[in-house]
Image 1: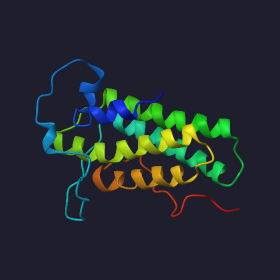
Image 2: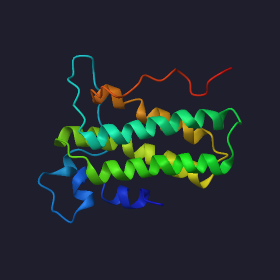
Image 3: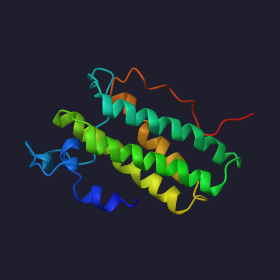
Image 4: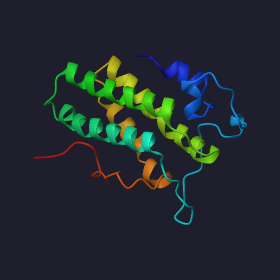
Length: 160
């Protein structure tokens, strides 16, 4: 599943439009991938159910990848987790429906997340891709008020 070039080519499209052949209802050029970080005084957006579910699946896969970082997971298992992240991101792009500003913030999270998943899928030895994915999702709780999102321990890999 090599979707990054497709997503990058249609980066400005809202989540739901990617699943259907429907023209966009607002100007997406105005909000590219780079978004300003949310500040403490900035309100966070509520995720819809597809976004919350997809990000929970991403978080679960990233948690499993701690085993890979510790050397306790095979390359095939790491590829499986990368594929799970790619699938979750694809589902988010296909099914979530957000306001334009929230959509723009989400693209700034999902594009680097997908790039990291594809890096790891292509080269399971590239453990830096796991940290890149963690860095990408670090902005999620700053932008979205998702009651299902669990704070993750600092650093990535767990210790015994």
